[in-house]
Image (cartoon, rainbow, N blue to C red; front, top):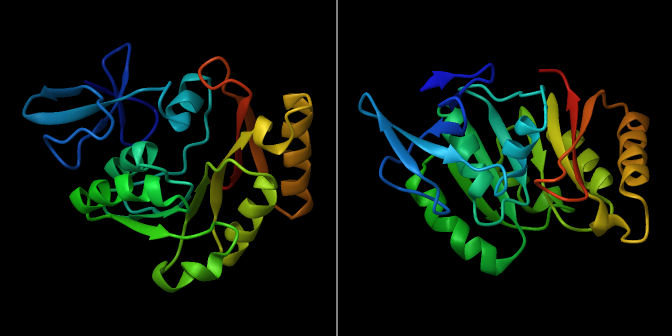
Length: 217
């Protein structure tokens, strides 16, 4: 297993992996591979938009061993668990509004002490600010209108340095050209004073999705 240019991300020359911080446990049926007594989890790009971003040529990767991450829209913990594998000395604060997804998220957090779950609405940072000591990075993957504004609100509320925003164009406006939605989201971020580093389309792994990277590494 070889290290990639991204901290905490490995490859066998074909697939991406993170080092399993909960050995023996898979989160979403991913392959577990042991090399020299170290276990790795395959990071599947068709199941994780962050992996799709890396596979699509994304270069902005602000995660380090001690990074604190506010994850908005954690769902059942697929991508959040891979981030937790990387930020092993940091914390991943997982916000999820769906009770059904939250029920799946909680056991994943129980097996990874650096994942903290919140059943809350990402449009209302006050609902979880009591439990978030700080966030270096905001990662957002939610399916509703106003995605850029929700990201901005949280980015500023927690004084984050950088972030990654998944834009689901069909959640914004199913009738609009996705590219126009990405550009409008970029404009909103810049108008709020955030530095946009890159916009990477995630097709074909995630149709009509793009990742917007902001801030400093």
